[in-house]
Length: 323
Length: 220
Image (cartoon, rainbow over all chains, first blue to last red):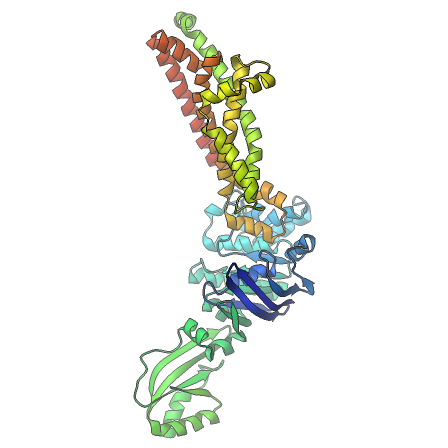
C-alpha cells in the first residue's frame, strides 16, 4: 500500500504540492489526473524517491520513502518499476539488453538460465519476441513503451508507476498499451499508479482516481462519480462539461446516468408519461471500463419541471437544474 | 618496383617523416584521451544537470580548461619546455613534441568528451535512477555507454587537429611531414615535395574521417 500523508513541496517560491493525502491500495489501478503543471508527475516522482518532498510522509508498505536513506530507498525502488512518456530506453542497447539492464544494476547475473528465461518471458508478455535484437530506433512508439514495460517488470516489482505513459502515443496504440497494463494488473497482481492528463486513460482502466489542480488534490474517488457529476469548477473546466449554447428560455434540467446510461429509455418514457415534449440540448455518454456513464441536458417549459423531477425521482435518476 | 626506385630515392624520406607524424599524433591522442577522460567525467558529474552538481568544482575546472585552450600551441610549446624536459627527458625530437601536443590536446578532448557525455538523454538517466542504479553505475552503464559513438567522433576530430599542430612541432626539431613541407616545400621552394606532403595528408585525413564515420554507424 502506498500512503501519502500531508505531503507538500515547493520549487523556490512556487508550491507544487499542497497538503496532499491519499492511499493507494494493493492491486489497484489508481489514476492521478489533472492539467499539465498540476503537480501530478512531481507527486509520482516523490513516491519512488526521484524527487524529494518538503514535509509530510510518503510510505510504501509501511516503509518511509526517505531520499537521505539511500540504502533503504534503493530497496524500495526495486519494488517500484517505472515507465515514462518518452520511454527512456538506452539507444545503444537492443530490446533484450534494455530489459536486462535493471538486473545489472542489482548485480544479478543476466547470463544465468533463470535470468534469460525471465527476460524472454517478459518480452513475450509485451509481444515483442520477434524484435529481440532490434535497437530502439527501429521500433515504433508503442513498441518502445512495451519494451519499457518489460524493463520495469524485470525486478519483480509490486508497484508500477506510469508517468504520462501513453501521452506520446496515438489513440489506437494507447488502447493496446492500456490493455497490456490491465493484463499485468490482473494476472500479476501489480498495483499500477497512472499519472495522466488523458481522460481516456482514466475511463478505460482506472478503478480510483485523484484529481490534482495547482498542486492541490481537489477530489478522490471512483472515476464515474468524479467525472459524471463533478462539483468542482476546475474538474468541470477540465472535462469541458456542458455546452455554452444551452437555450435561454424555459429550464434546463441535467440528468446523470451512472453505469446504466444505455439501459433504460428514460427520456422517451418521461415524454410519454408526462405527455409533453422535451428538447435534448446536450448529451455526453462515455464508457468507463465496462459501463456507460454520462449526462444529458433537457430543455422544457417551466410548468413541466416539477412533474419531470418527480418522475425522475421515481426512477432513481439523479438530476440537477442548471441555472 | 623498378620504375619507382628513383622516386623513392628522392622522396622516400617523406614517408619516413610521415611515420614520425603518425607517432606524434597517435601517441599524444592516446595520452590525451586517457588523461582528458578524467576531467570530462568530473565536469559531467558536477555540471548543474549532473549527478552531483557542484558549482565551485565545475567552474574552477572549467576555467583551467579554458585557460589552456586559449594558449596558442606554439606558445604553449615554449612555455612548458621545463615540464617537457622533466617528463620526456628532452624537449627536442619526436619524444619532446609528444608532451606539448598531449598537454594542448587534453583540454580540447576533455571539453569534447564533456559535451558528448552531457548529451546523454536526461530521461534515460532518470530511468536508471528509478531502478535503483548507483551514480557509478549510471556513469558506466548509461553516460559512457550511450556516449561512445559521440566520443569516437570527438577522437577523430582530435586526431585531425593534432596533425595540424604536429606541423608546428618542426620548430623544436620534431620532424614530421608538416616540417618537411615547410622546410623543403616552402622555404627551399620545392613544389613537388609540397604537393606530395599535401596529398599524403589529405589521404590521411580523409581516411581517418571515413573510418570514424563507419565506426560511428557501427557503434550507434
